[in-house]
Length: 107
Image 1 (cartoon, helix red, strand yellow):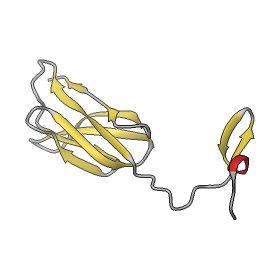
Image 2 (cartoon, rainbow, N blue to C red):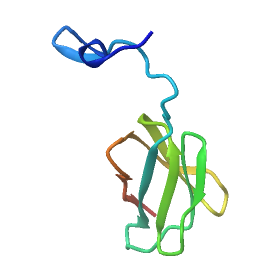
Image 3 (cartoon, rainbow, N blue to C red):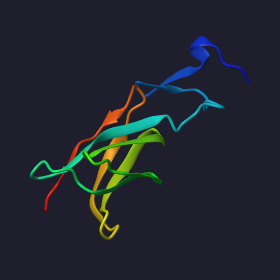
């Protein structure tokens, strides 16, 4: 089924939505980047994980994860010492560009 122009979007209860799901549209377009520091602004040593994508936090506390599904997700920070999560929060992955997320870890 091919949809064109106003056939692609429908108005329901005052909100616009797609009339049909988009086929062959990549959904893992999200990028999350930021810094993870402790309460003394010292870079945190560990890992950051979002929706199954895990990366090591760089020596300056920065991180960047790519190919994250758009929409709601949970970001987890774990220590390099034991790998256990020490911080967790919900975030919204944006489609318009990298989603910034700086985190302060209390020690």
